[in-house]
Length: 318
Image 1 (cartoon, rainbow, N blue to C red):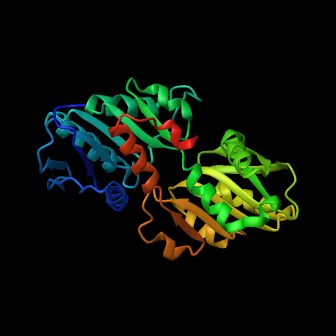
Image 2: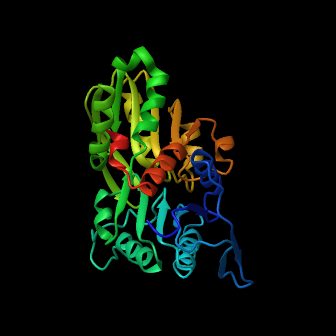
């Protein structure tokens, strides 16, 4: 570690509540930084305290307004680099542009790789993120990446919610891409797994085809990494309800909730939609009474503590 082994944590404006909760878990004060804008909208950042030789963590989700959040992160990383911080870890609970992780059509970008490049160039020497949309994004970086999963947080809630009824729970993946995540969840709960086979007609537009597995008379939990417009999750909920599910729940890590998402969720057969605070809801839970928010601050805080102390992060999930 550097000359000053002090842990310092800073935050942009994307999710200050989560940053403060992480600080509370770690028993440290949130670092002083002025985040403002020039009259033309350009972002202005000033680090208000000495960080020379310090182990610095910057908490910033790539949430709405997405591009502003990203620019704040990049400019803060650059400011810290130029202020001689010993190590700079970008803590990105929700990693933006992760859905553009490969060339699936001619003449399209791989924006997730571009994100990795600019975060490194800005000054990050390490990245801590959570539930990437595509795990291979870790390989887009040339610096260490610690990839956390909200699995323990969601598992704890489901265990408390269903208790002895776990034998009647079925974990459902809303598409083929999420099978690995759903299988890991089902294995931990020792419950059955089902898969929804769907055909995507275009961006933010999916059509449910059929259900592989038995959901009749079961408590169904649809599991995904994010809910954006909620089209996929609501169609999946309707499909399993039509197949005779006793109740239908949804669990996701990143509540993007754009466009008609809240209205769709409220009018769906879903009993409850369990999300985490990687993205702030900013009052959306008042619009949709089905939302239940769990905090990932203790998980992120423990990971930050272990990185600072050069301990294993992987053992968090052992």
